[in-house]
Image 1 (cartoon, one colour):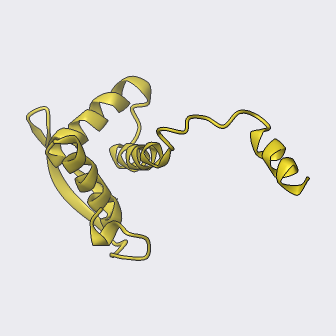
Image 2 (cartoon, one colour):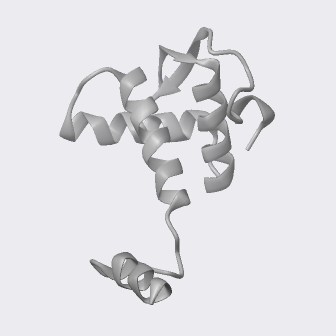
Image 3 (cartoon, one colour):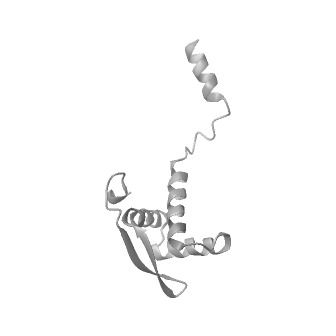
Length: 106
């Protein structure tokens, strides 16, 4: 992750940038930290930033044709939340944490 994306780093000023989606230019306004996050995601996925934004735009058209800036923020949040999920451990069985805590006290 770039230094601007790290917690507490970078500016959160809103930056308006022009992007090309489906052969036409449009603009999108995002905080600088979200631009950094989207660049990081695009790099991790082997895409250009424009290609990632086009993918986000295409996905929102079917579900909720709302604001592209909001869709980009939600996409970035969901992507990083998914990356933070434990891969190997899998889901914790219901009540497992409580049972383990009780055994430790016994």
